[in-house]
Image (tube, rainbow, N blue to C red):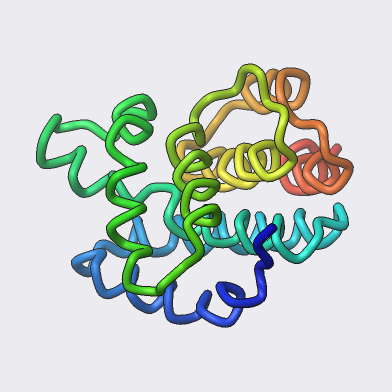
Length: 172
């Protein structure tokens, strides 16, 4: 069993490195920072243990690591393309931080499934989906109907539901 402590101390360095590798793309940087903030908040409020919280936070930071490659290679950042390319890029990116192998495998799996809304069994997967949607809803200007559909379809955590309601589904 691995612990999250070793990697928890490297989160700031992971953020700094990814900012440096984002080639000044402020949208990408702002997006992953917002997803990270929501994922951290939801994970903490839902009571994740240290390891799951750390896996979630690192995955939230690197979840869109494949976007620059997908733009160049495919001319698109469509979710399935990100999932296809993201795991290998994640492994390479994290290798400089000397992470435990099991930790890397868990983060890679989340990156490779962060647009997969079916068969969600891991709490970190659920929270990553919710955090990413909270950010995407604003960035992509989702309609109230799209937000309601997501609420019914895959939001399950009390914290994620509360944030979705308070940000997007307020009366008035």
